[in-house]
Length: 109
Image 1: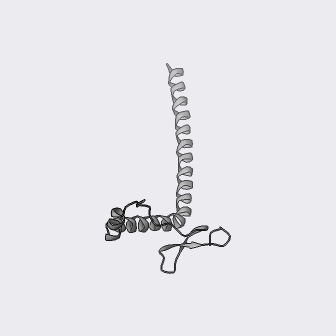
Image 2: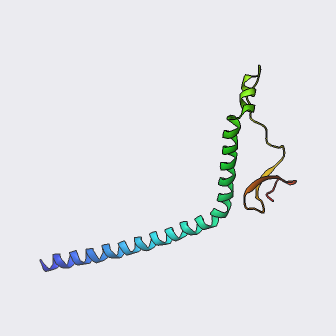
Image 3: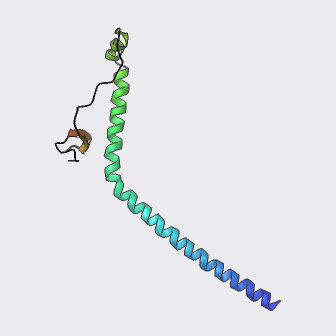
């Protein structure tokens, strides 16, 4: 019985050590995720703001009289206006809101 208790104590100690190791590993991974999230936010927020603006403008345009007239035209393809040709990149303006800007080399501004 004493040997059995000793074996159980050793097993509990081993399990606690494993648990601490897993908790440390989880903490490191959480820190990496937070670091990566903080690094990506400055790039992600302008993109999301631009996407929200474009979606809002598309919705308001579809509700406008211009969209209704276009739907009524015979042979109308109902295509949305085309973006400017050439490489585009998302660039934050001075006010902080994103805008589309053409680049000469195709690389971001």
